[in-house]
Image 1: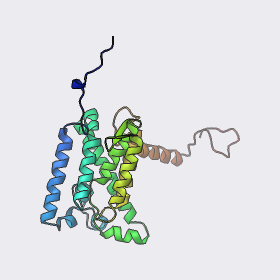
Image 2 (image 1 turned 60 degrees about the vertical axis):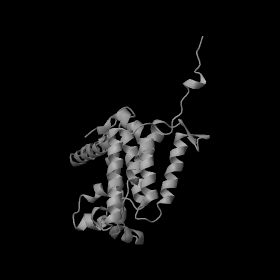
Image 3 (image 1 turned 30 degrees about the horizontal axis):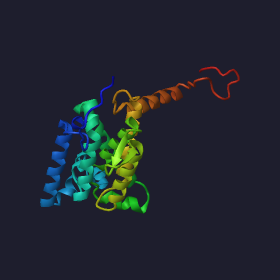
Image 4 (image 1 turned 180 degrees about the vertical axis):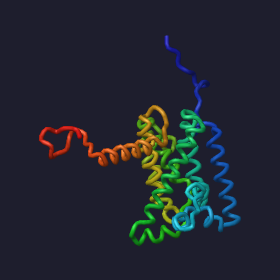
Length: 248
């Protein structure tokens, strides 16, 4: 006979549970830097991501340090709450080291997208080139993508009442963060770069293990092999102008 839990045995919880070590350290670091920004706003010019400073003045730390700065209370609150809600389960699954590797890789992908966008020959790029981009949004968007891929149909209760599949909920949450960051020194290229970087890293791992740089390594080796083939005139299946389709 199946036993059902009584009312006293039922429990309810908000969020994914206690903070694991890596996420706790990230939140503390982000809040500490946010308070320092309130005291000394000029730090944004030194630690924020300014493509001109990276490309011309070689401030190579900025693609990393910009992730710890934020433009306002809502900005840091949204990012830290999302980091806790959607990152906690991944740190428990992957371990702290792999989680941090993925988190920072998404943030670096977001920084790369911002710098590349700032180099485009358009008016908006001229502004992006000299204005600091700040925030952990790129890394957080990578976490949203991961959650949507790992748990697409898991119900998330919006306002604790309406169940929404995780794949739709993360899209909605991402759209809210995207629209809420209008202005405030946050480039949308960072959001897209972090999301795309996370998607490529997870797909390269085949959904079984986390290999953040496997996709980059694969693309590099594929390019290198193709270059060698062209150098020695090697073509799989023969060249189109070969009547017997031989391999050279």
